[in-house]
Each structure stands twice: as C-alpha cells, then as structure tokens.
Length: 220
Image (cartoon, rainbow, N blue to C red; front, side, top):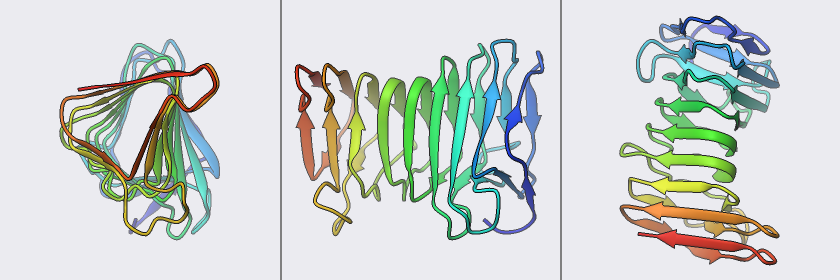
C-alpha cells in the first residue's frame, strides 16, 4: 500500500445508523492485533467509498506483521470495499467472527490466511496471494469475482459451510511444505463440514473426513 496512512488500534462501530469511512486512496492501518467490532446495536459499517478505494491493513507500525480481527454481532453488514493488503513487508492475517455478515468486496492480497470463525463471509474480490482459508464455523461464500489461484498453504473447512460459486484453486506449484496446496474438509475430531460447488474446484490434495469420527461432504 502506498500513500498516506491513518493508524488506529481498534474501531468500535456502535452508532445505530450505518457508518461509512471513505479512504480516498489512503491506507487505514489497524494495530498489531487490531480490529473492528460491531455490537448488536450497530447499524453497520463500510470501509471505502467504492470497491478498492484505498487499503486496509494491520500491524501498528511500518513493515510489522499483524492480525486483522473483524467481529460483527449486528444485523447490519460490515462491508470492506478497500483492498486488504500486507503491511509493507509485514504479513497480515484476517480473522472473522461474530454472528453477522462481513462482505469483503475489495481485492485481498495478504501472505497470511483468512480464518472464519462465525457468521457469514462473502468474498467478492480477487483473492490472489491469500495464504489459505481456514473455516472453523459459519459460512464462507466465494462469489463470482473471487479466486484463490495463489493460495499456497493448507486450507481447512471444519464445522462450517463453504459455498463455491466461482472457479477456485487451492494449489500453487512449489509450495512451502508437504502440506501445501491441499484442501481438508472435516479434519478435526467430531467436526462436521460441507463444501457446495456450482463450478470447478482444484486442489493438489483433497482430504475429506480425516478427523476421528468426523463427517465431511462435497456436493456439486
């Protein structure tokens, strides 16, 4: 991300009316473990006035690795229009939780993984370069404009639902370990996970139901 950077640690969006932060091509940087929290009374929050307006990252200081935590417990949407990027040379991971909707419309290019731990996550932008997808709870929808063509780590769907509405590749040649480039569905003990596809899914290794007494399913 280039240009002027606004740095905050965590943003609490507790207004009852929907709010919008327009980046105007600038970067909004959260703390090293920084996030956005929408309580049940929030009317919703939008970052970026239009798709790929500016950048959203985490790390707290230049070139520092960070974790971006997005928690929506409201009936309104948390909408990320800005591109989600690394913090310079610092790798960024994204964790999504709560019960509500998180729409990521901007492009995602981070070295870390996306961890979905609740609610519903819509991925509408390009996800080239994303380290991997780890779905522990809730629903992730990979919509028409999305792709994982450079995902290079193990991706896991456990105790949740992954809906694939666009061609997806969970592979890249020359990954960093023997576990790279794979998709595991229901890999933990007692886990229940479903992958629904309306198009093509490609993975160097596909494992279903690897966990003890787990149950995984893949439908097309």
